[in-house]
Image (tube, rainbow, N blue to C red; front, top):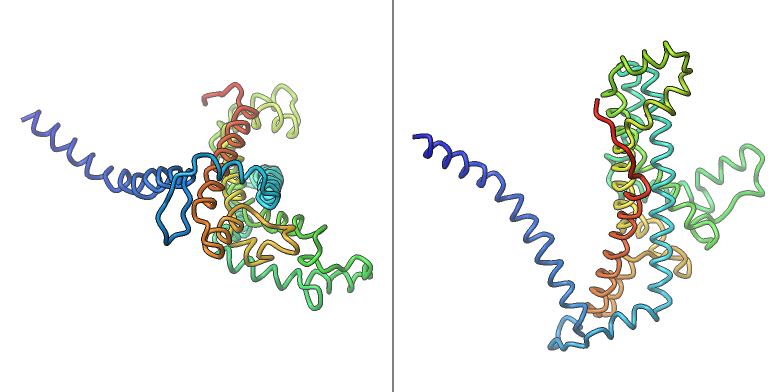
Length: 296
């Protein structure tokens, strides 16, 4: 009887896990393996495949546009991560001090951009950055700073900062929410003990709360980093990689290489190299944030 119950529970557990395993297998592992194999071949999507070993990788390292797209993607991802996590953490601390109930509306407003489709955000900021009737230039003219007006998305010097600013605004809601929830889980007795010892609120934040939520900050950094690095739709709607490839990112270059020039193997090679770079950056981030953890 007991064995039958155990077997039934095991079958139920396997049944519940099968969809997740199937999704991982068919959504990640098989396409990933196929992508790696294809990166060592030459294929235009129509003719027969042929192995070329490392020719695609050698080509990638000599492709100035690919190297530029990697550089742009890394800059966008890292700066967006730093900006979104720092701002999200500061906002979480402010809302934590304000109170759970009192800050509910503010949390909703800050988190709302994360719920808006990225294509809509891209269209919204296309109008904001418009050089003629855009809200940003109109605001600058209104306050007497006409000399600062610019063709923000058509200028190679300003296009990346504009994309990064949109990315930070879009993604800071998640670090804010994660850090706020983590702060709420800290026992009030720890803060009370610090208060009794004469610690100010700033000292409590720096020496008590920040060390306790360090794992959450690391998780937020990885989350924002991955989302910022793989951004395709936002950059495509805003600039399509222009002007003059100044905002070209790896996903856009991969898409153009595969579906415009029918170089599917070379596009797969770029995907493999990008995945390696992302893994290295994530590991470095985790190593930087690695420290003593506390249980409470």
